[in-house]
Amino acid sequence: MSSINIAGLNKRYGQTHVLKGLDLSIKNGEFISFLGPSGCGKSTLLFCIAGLEEISDGSIRFDGREISDLGPRERNIALVFQDYALYPHMTVRDNIAFPLRQQKIDAATIAKQVAWAADVLGIQALLDRLPAALSGGQRQRVAVGRAIVRNPSVLLMDEPLSNLDASLRVHMRTEIRRLQKELGITVIFVTHDQEEAMVLSDRIAVMNNGVLQQFAAPMDVYSRPANRFVAGFIGSPQMNFLPGDLCGGAADHVVGVRPHDLKPGNGIANPFTLSGELVLVEPAGPFQFLDIAIGGHIVRATCTDIAGLSPGETITVGASPEALRYFNADTGARVSHSR
Image (cartoon, rainbow, N blue to C red; front, top):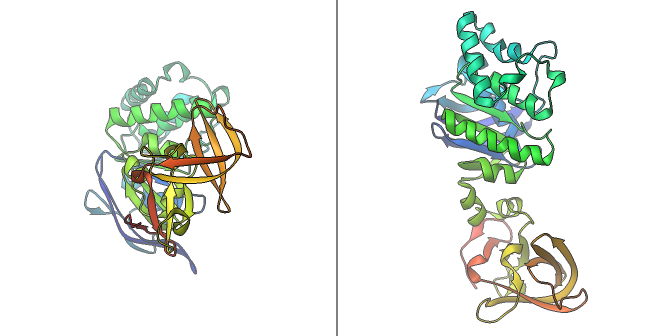
C-alpha cells in the first residue's frame, strides 16, 4: 500500500487551466474521496494520479518516490471505471485473470489469485458466466475483482456506483468499504454524490473549478466548512444562506444555518429566531420540511409535528447560535462569529 503526496499540481489543456496548484497528502491505507460538481476536475486529477493524463507541472509521489514520469503499469495502481469495462466475450474468471496474464504470471498463481478475489467478493458461483449474464451489481464486483487481483498499491475508482439503482448503490458502498478495510489498501474514490463521500471516506477532498476547497474528515467538512461553496455543497437539503443584516449581523457577512438545525419555536432554547410566512410543508418520513418566506428569501426548516401549522400563516423558527455559520459576502470564506 502507498501514501500519496501531490504538490503544486497543475493541469492545462492549451489555455484552459483545469487543475490549479493542488496540494494533497494522502496517508497509507486511507480511503479518500474526491467530491465536487461535474467539471470540477476530480476525474482529471484521478487520471493524473493513474498516469493516464500528463501533468503540466508539480509532482506526484508514492511513498516519497516521484512517479510523474512513470507509465500507468509502472505505478502499480488499479482503476475501476464507471462503465465496468469488462470484456464481453470472456468469462468472469478470465476477466479477473486478464491483468495477471498480461504480466505473464504463471497459471498456478493466476488460479490462486482469482480464487482469492472471488472469495473476497463473494462471486465464486459466477466465475464461469459471461458479463451479459450478470446484474449491474455483479458486474461491478467483477470489475473490482479484476482491480484487486494483482495487489495494487493504490485502488482508483471513478464514480463506480453511478450506474446502479439507489438500493444497490447503498449495498455496494458498504461492500467497497468492507473490502478496503479488509485489504488495508489506499483508495481514491471519485464521486459527485456527497452521501457516498460522507459514508465511505476517511477524508474528503472537496473541489470546485479545479481548486481544492477543503480536505478534511467528513464531519469536519459538514460542521466546519471552509467556505460558502463547501457549506452549500455538503448537506441535504442545502444550507440556508441569508444576508447578515437580515439576521442581526454584519452587512458584509452571509449567515448560514442548516434546515435540520432550524425548528419552530422561540425563547431561551432558540435565541436566534426568524419569522415569516409558511409557504409549503413537504413530508419527508419522520419529519417535515417547512419552506418559509423571510425577507424575500425562502428559508427551509424542519419539524416533527405539523399540528396547527398551515401554509399562509406566520411562523417563527429558531436555532442555537452554535448552529450558525458566517461567511464573507464577497469572498465566501468562513469568518468567525461576530454579531
